[in-house]
Image 1 (cartoon, rainbow, N blue to C red):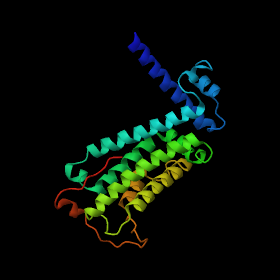
Image 2 (cartoon, rainbow, N blue to C red):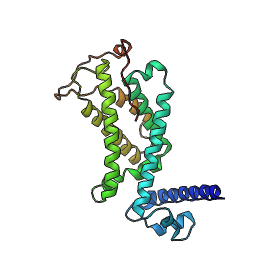
Image 3 (cartoon, rainbow, N blue to C red):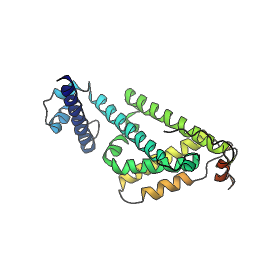
Image 4 (cartoon, rainbow, N blue to C red):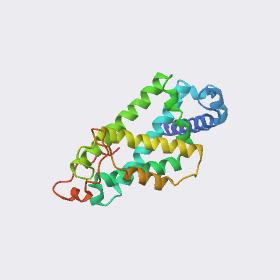
Amino acid sequence: MPKIAEQARAVRREQIIAAGLTCFARSGYHTTTMADVAAQAGVSKGTPYLYFASKEALFLALHEQWDCGAMERVEAVIAALPDADRRSPRQVLHAIAAAIAAHVTAESETCRVLMEARALAAHEPAIAAAVQASDTATLQQLGQLFAAGISAGEWPEGTDPALAARLFTAGLYGLMAQWHLAPGSFSWDAAAAALAGGTAPHADGAAPGAGGSAAAADSGEPPAVPVL
């Protein structure tokens, strides 16, 4: 019985998260109330509070669910790469971009709702903390990936890995914003591939040349490649 009750609780929790997503997508964060979420889920007004202490907590659960789903998709795509590609930071970056593109198109409503999180972060400390924690982890791992690629000769010597990571994520967020304003206006696969294939910036801000060879990764020990 306890296991059945636990499973039922998990199902109800997911039902409330799904209802929250629908309400946030329809009305926005500030307009949505927990009573709206209860009505959408078909439960009593007090039921959502048995799972989430507040609307903010529900929004944060949706944010965490998105991050976990994106992580799982990225890890699966990287795991499916041939061994040689998994040893190449540039190929891993392409895989990451493709995985995020697939996640955005598969979970477009969630992505659109969570785009609001960055605006909310200016006035909602808990949401700001969640966004900053996610960004910090992502930028750290991408920075390590670019650093590994520089060591392998896949990006030019002098490339600033931290700045390259920021520009890559900024490009992804920009594509997400454009996609939600005009769905279907461009190919996510093509845009993500172009973003991953772009030339990274030098640490001194100068435009890098065409140097750097992906083949350099084949010499000696392969660089350690982090997974988002």
